[in-house]
Image 1 (tube, rainbow, N blue to C red):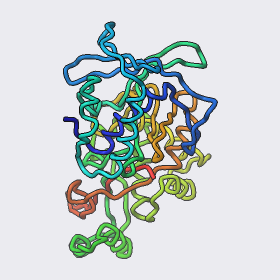
Image 2 (tube, rainbow, N blue to C red; image 1 turned 90 degrees about the horizontal axis):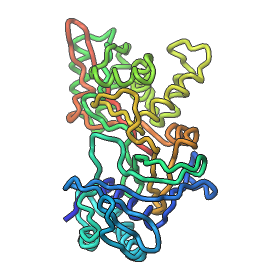
Image 3 (spheres, rainbow, N blue to C red; image 1 turned 45 degrees about the horizontal axis):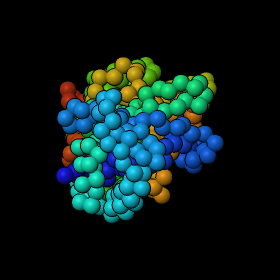
Amino acid sequence: MLKGNKGEWSEIYAFCYLLNSGKLYAADKDLNALESIYFPILKIIREEITDSVYSYEPGESIKIYLGENLVKSINKSEFENIIGTLYEKIPQSKGVFQIAEVNDFFDNIYCTKLKANSSHKEDIVLKIQDIHTGISPVCGFSIKSYLGSKPTLINAGENTNFVFGLSNCNDEIMNRANSIQTMTKYVDRMNYLLISGCDFEEILPLDSVQFEENLCFIDTIMPRLVSLAVLYFYKYRIINLKQVVEKMKEINPLNFRNTIMYEYKFKKFLCACALGMTPGRRWEGEEDANGGYIVVKNDGSVVCYHIYNRKEFEQYLYDYTFFERASGSRHNYMTVYKEEDQYKIKLNLQVRFR
């Protein structure tokens, strides 16, 4: 029986929705569908647990192929019923769950798993009709869903920790900061360090050599930019990524002649995270999700950002993401420590959609 979390069930929801629709609509920067810009879907390609590759062709009767062989046709109305059930069940469920009402249906259409390979950003593979060129490319798309909790763009881990040196610190300040165990201890520890006169100095290279290398593929100055953004989030208690970048433009820590460079570079960073780059996996600039980004909206509709509306996609990422504090005990950050007579602290990066 299929089971997964809300994000994983949303992937199979998008699969059913797009097969039923037969079209993938583009979105503007605020996730509104652009009715005049869409991509006809010729087929959806899925690789199952058995390594069998099935193709699903939209139409009044949805045709299922194993390789070149037609193995089944399913009336479109059956998919409409499943879409309604998934839309009802996904938001109200918690953790990892099953949806018993749909299990026989997915068995019947050879779907043996919910989620794509977690090492890649592409969650669904479509063959679409490119209305601009007339060609029919096979494209991988990443899927994010608002049917459950707000989706993450960058997941926290020890490889997203950034190390900072603490000047004007001493053993007493270190011990008192670490002893703070309030409900808001991460905010309170930062406030105490600032009130005590500690200055934060970013330390390169990053804690994660792999993450730093990945960031350098975007821009060689990117490790320092992201490090500063993380610091500003904790130091100034600014949550929205756009506002953090605005603070960087105001302070201009890198003395750019044109401060719009901060915004430009962060949009490229966000786009890379959305389409291919993850902190812990070797990345050389390629986009796994070479088709773009599919979003399942909270009203159940599905839209996308494709290569042709990349500007809107970058603006959407920039406008609708925020920094979030992850678990300190789990990811080993926000504790002052002493290393080679230097006081240090790790701050963690996690970015979520709002």
